[in-house]
Image 1 (cartoon, rainbow, N blue to C red):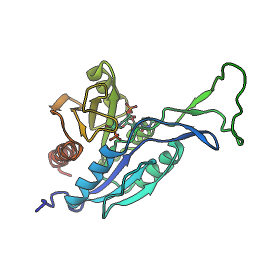
Image 2: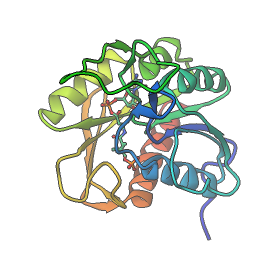
Image 3: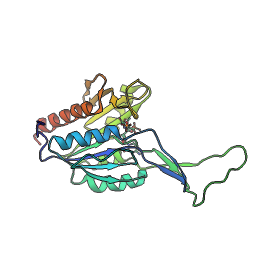
Length: 223
Ligand code: PMT
C-alpha cells in the first residue's frame, strides 16, 4: 500500500511543452513529452495529495484523480498557473515553457518567399519568476532547470534569482536524462547548495525523491 503521507496537501504541477503559433499550421516548440510532470502529478496523488496539473500538449493520459487543465501557449500556461497558484501549498514546475514566441502570429499560412526567412521573436512571461515573487509564507516552490552546460552554476543562479525552495537540475545531454526519456538523472539544490545527486531512475522514482524532499522541507518549517 502507498503511504498517504501527502494527505491534505494541495499540489500544483506543470508539465509538457508549450506551442507558440507562427501561423494556423505551424508553431515553435520543444521536445518535452510531459512524462516528468505527469509522473510528479501521479505520485503526489497516489500519496494522498490533491493535485492540479496544468499541461501543455502531450500524448499522455492524465493520471486518475488529478484535475488536469490543458493549455497550449506559454501565455495560457501563465494565466492558468497564476490563477491556480493561490490555493496551492506546493508548486512544481516541470514544464518546458518557451522563453520566446513569434512577435506576430500570421492569420494566413506563411507563403514560401525568397531564399531566407527571418522570424522576429518576443519574450514570454517567466512564470516561475512571477511565482517566486508572489510566494506565500506557507508555500514551497520547486523549479526545474534543463541544462546542457555549467549545470551547477546555472542551477544555483536560477534558484536564487527566482526565489525557489528547491531546484531540480537535469543535464539534458546525458543519455537517459531529460526530454522524452522514461528515466532521468537529476541533481537537486536548495538555498544552501546541493542536497541530492540521484543516479538514473525512472521518472516516477525521481518524482518520489522530489516529493520526499518537499515533505521534509514542510516538516522542517513546521508547515
Ligand atoms: O517532459 P519530459 O519529456 O519528461 O522532459 C522533462 C524535462 C526535461 C522537460 C524536465 O525534466 C525539465 O527540465 N523541465 C524544465 C525545462 C525548462 O524549460 O527548463 P529551463 O531551464 O528553460 O527553465 C527553468 C524553469 O523555469 C523551469 O521550471 C520552467 O518551467 C520555468 N520557466 C521557464 C521559462 C518561462 N517562460 N517560464 C517558466 O516558468
